[in-house]
Length: 181
Image (cartoon, rainbow, N blue to C red; front, side, top):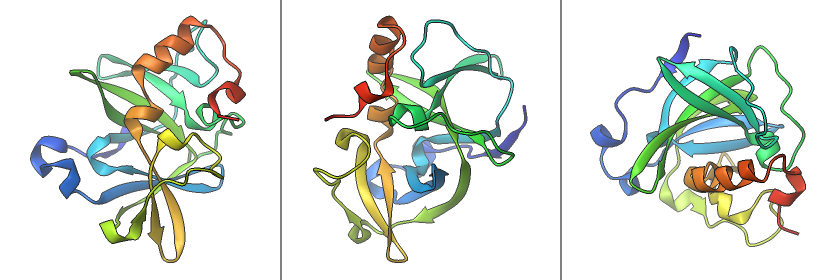
């Protein structure tokens, strides 16, 4: 499984996250999402997943990434939608998240990666308090790009190791349980 893109030296080399306004954009179910580039480690081809029994439906399995076991999350299912269909553009984005004092790599399945964009702070609105199809705490903001909105994800909430562990202990969870009524 070769890396499509290696982002390389990120958080330490770039500086404070508040100073950074570059985002990796990707498609998921026809919608555009973005993740701060500082959280991205690399983008790899989809493949070689090992399923893990008794995990929530949104955990596709694990991959071996240079000797490390990395869980892979299907963001579509995590957002209460259907399982993402696999195409030749489907890939796994390796994201570094913080869990307490530790950092952990988590892979997320996306339909396709679009591009790295710079979104000025004045083009980012607060997350809506209603009307979004995903939990409001998963949304860091709404970026405006060419008159259209892109959902900027709060990766530490979307991929919370603690929350995923609780859901894993509960066994298989219905996706509707993840979306507030």
